[in-house]
Length: 51
Image 1 (cartoon, helix red, strand yellow):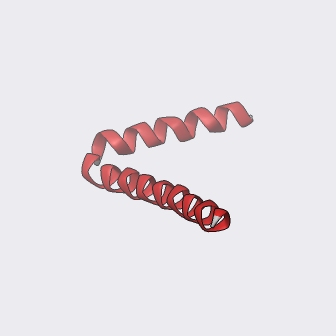
Image 2 (cartoon, rainbow, N blue to C red; image 1 turned 90 degrees about the vertical axis):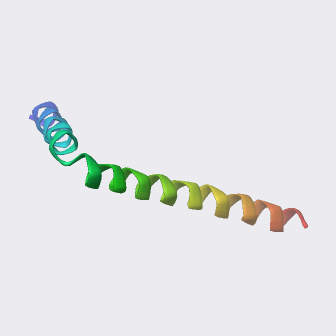
């Protein structure tokens, strides 16, 4: 059951990307920016810790 739900979610994500590429790109860009910000903040933390 868990595997079937995973495949259905994957199919829906692919369908969404195929039918709405602009908004999907905006979502991906936002996620990427968020991840980059997390790593940037971790770098600042360790840099300040070393000082």
